Image (cartoon, rainbow, N blue to C red; front, side, top):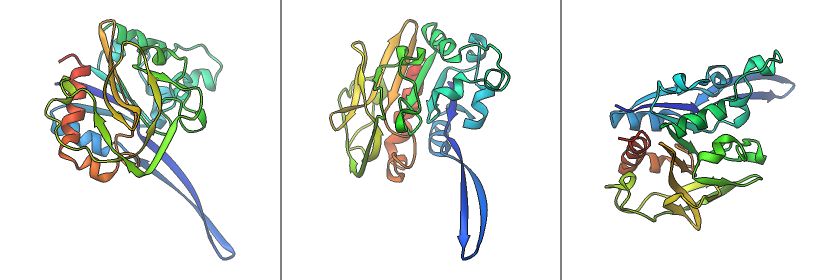
Length: 248
């Protein structure tokens, strides 16, 4: 059974409510892991979720720690959350570059997926900041240096490019539309499996003994809407992607 670590996919929202002369604040914690976790679990894949607020301290920092998993998924979590351990950010101490360790782990045989989102690739306002990091080196993508989001509220239909690849085996018929994605180029040795408009949607790459993939849209709402996660191909697509990344 493949064991997958999903880092990110959570957020805290703070609101101020005004009612005439009076006001009060509220804070809510939310996650977006549900659709992917449930689909992968149904596919017989174990999912461990590390929420965004746990990433700075809890993200693996050694090859041995990464070896507890077959695949690591970075989903809507910026590079700084991985680079800035509290010992560095708060206490001014040297700590290991975990993006570098992750890239080395991939070269040694690990699997890595970056999924799209406001804090993926270069992200909203360029704040995700993965360009020119060690992770950028191993992914199939060529990350833009600026805000790379493409909002398609009218819906954009994915198009399969290579239906013969094991990741897309049995993922038949028309795919539901997506409401947005991150735009990036592809490295020369990347293999494009699906596109959205003229841009890559799903691509894979072999790196040393490991494998990497990029999925340009969200793993769930909002960019990946409810009808996409309810689609019969959703679980099959991501289940096969995780098994391919794990080397099964």
